[in-house]
Amino acid sequence: MNRTLPLILAVALFMENMDSTVIATSLPAIAADIGTSPIALKLALTAYLVALAVFIPVSGWMADRFGPKNVFRAAIAVFVIGSVACAVSGSLPEFVISRFLQGMGGAMMTPVGRLVLVRATPKNELVAAMSWLTVPALVGPLVGPPVGGFITTYFTWHWIFLINVPIGVAGMWLATRFLPRTPSSSVPPLDVPGFILSGVAASGIVFGLSVVSLPALPPSIGIATLVVGLVSGVIYLVHARRAANPLLALSLFRNQVFRASVLGGSLFRIGIGAVPFLLPLMLQIGFGLTPFQSGMFTFVSALGAIGMKLVTAWLFRTAGFRRVLILGSLVSGATIAVYGFFTPETPYLLMLAILLSGGFIRSMFFTGVNALAYAEVSDADTSKATPITAVFQQISIALGVAVAGGILEVCTQLHGGPLMLADFHTAFFLVAAISATASFFFMGLAADAGSAVSGHGGRSARTVEATPRG
Image (tube, rainbow, N blue to C red; front, side):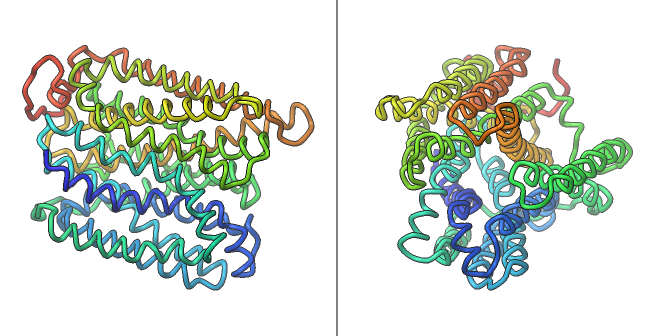
């Protein structure tokens, strides 16, 4: 398989995924420089997430209307412009607006990049291609905090955003040079009511969960926006049933394979989304490590994510999606639960080995669940499937952070004191259980589910129409 395409897309997506977390450790320095507080500056984090939630649903329509290659390059350009704007921001409003602009570019980069890959890759090679494309999602949140801390400590926080300029320019040149040109197609008019409703629903849910879990505003505002998002989501469901060409084609959920991939994967990501939030905090508060030291621990999981790429395609071809995803969700949940037994007396080498193995398993699972989403979706429906998977991914990760923050808050209320190591242990046990329950979605799959993509059982690649199954 030609690895040029997934690697080009992965570089751009890594830039986005790392940038979304790299500023976390730099908030105090940025806040002091622009004259605001770190708590208030967290609005910039939520502004980025809101932009993703608003514009991801329309990414599939944009790709069909203007061509995925053109939209992908434009998304990189918008992201780079937003990065420069962040670097030169001198006030809180300027920084928040700049982060929103970055989020607009990021909202198109991830789903459209995945769409380019799916359309250009034969289905029997999709697992191998996805194994490279999922690296940014796993590595970025883990290496972002230590990289941000290093740049802020030894340079200035401005370089966190300025380093995106050469990366983005290289990404646009590589995309122009190597990505296949897919002509724009005749598409129905944009579903404007659906765009508004889906944007309000997704952004309300993501913003509400972010504010509740990382309070930059009173929790009541987070709860109110969460309710607005949920109500808008219900209204969108009614609208989608009546609209001739809804923005998000929820009819795809009639397919059991697609449904299991999206819903099972989302449940799994709730636990995984909590880990980058819980682990650094536990290492710093419970173990007394510095931010840079804790970042080096989390980096080991990223190495495991990369290393698994060498055997992922073989694993799914040998055992099939159903068996691997069931076992993967259970084993990955167990590795998260083991984090709940870490103490300052635990040998560091043992902790590193467990973190490395956890990275292996999570990488394998994400590669499989992302490829499975397209296993029984027709080529004509890939642009409809891509934004749905991306929206659910963003919501589930935000929900993971909210769940983790909520567990810690309940623990401190119960014992009436500051955070203790035992509170983190409890949180790891509970989010591990949530991740493990994803296995139920895959137990209902047929043994040969997605075999046209995995090659399990010797079946050849074919295009499978998105018809209801099971």
